[in-house]
Amino acid sequence: MDVFKVSGNGPLNGEIKVGGAKNAALPILAATLLTDETVVLKNVPDLSDMRFMIEILQHVGAETVQPEPGTWEITAKEITHIAPYELVRKMRASVCLLGPLVARMRKAEVSIPGGCVIGPRPIDLHIKGLQKLNCQVDIANGYVHVDASEIKGGPIFLGGRSGSTVTGTANIVMAAVLAPGSTRLECAACEPEVVDLCNLLVKMGAQIDGIGSPELTITGVDKLHGCEHSVIADRIEAGTFVIAAAITRGDVTVKGIAPKLLSAFLDKLEEAGLPMELGDDTIRVLPYEGSLKPVDVITLPHPGYPTDLQAQLGALMTQTDGISIITERIYPNRFMHVPELQRMGANIAMEGPSAIIKGASKLSGAPVMASDLRASAALILAAFAATGDTWIQRIYHLDRGYERFEQKLTGIGAKIERLHEREMPKELLEE
Ligand code: EPU
Image (cartoon, rainbow, N blue to C red):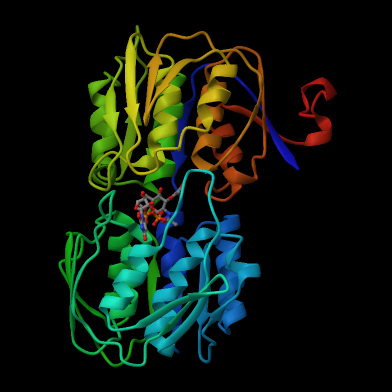
């Protein structure tokens, strides 16, 4: 297994480019199953999660061609309706095959994804939405079995305990675009990644009104066709780079991201006193004297503060003067990075779903364990502000969602080396 050796190397400086959004590309890849014509997708990030999704598409019968890096041509002429456990277990997001299979095949058998370290990831709302579309849904032997022979549009309220669901909305929209009649979807997720999926579906011939709002009206059509689509930029990758610049007091321009996709995040950083210049598709972070101010933030569905930038903000707040409170409302257990940050010298107390961070900690390098994608990023960011070397194990989590992370950050002056575990000093390896 690979590990990262990260050494604090002072301020980061220069330009860094954002890639395509993982969480948009995954349901968009699944959406290619909705037509037997070729869909050409551009700006698809090169990540292990994409490779899992391509593998599943191939398994159900799609032809996939990669004419150049970042571009995929997918033709799903004849497909089956079964997504087996061996493939689905590798990635939770494969649940978003449910919608396209139901729409196209009028039946689906998709293995229920397993648990996840950031907390329970139920699919009850996906099931409820399908039932409201007049589908018969049964759970047996670890699979969701859907009989959609009588599928038809109708009113659906898709809200759950924590509000809207991102992949749940994706699934129900994809199921509804080929269902007879009209579907009014209330409490739909408004995340930019859902908007990007809807925009692709419209290019494929779907009729969707209210895109970007919590109320979508979908009028079913008989058939969808091929098209070309470029995946939107990854706002979470962009936010992670902004924090990398802030935590090192660097001068960094993050390119290829519309700041309006990150309003809640940028608003918090502005409140913290981080000097920034926002362009149409750039965010420049400027160096600052003294300390940033602490923040009090609660993660919420879009347009609220994104849970996927919670851990990274926590890393930054270990360095500000004062006490920050970071409350996680989407995945209350998403604090696996906290004990690792504590090992580096951070002063953080947990109080229910809130991390209370006493800032201005002197961090020092330590061997730490990545537990999930965003936790991995938070540990690397903390390592930039630490003295000495930080060794980060289980970085395969990071490779699921950050494309060429270490190359991109090395390009603006970071010191990150990808090494094999056996190159770690023996005394630092876990038992
Ligand atoms: N929920 C239910 N029932 C459901 C579905 C969700 O109660 O049927 C709850 C969840 O437990 C959670 C909340 O609703 O508390 C929101 O979950 P959501 O369904 O929106 O999450 P998701 O679609 O499974 C996507 C991203 C996550 C991101 C969340 C929230 C993808 C592939 N994943 O997950 O991304 O954290 O939305 O924005 O789009 C990541 O990239 O690191 C990541 C975990």
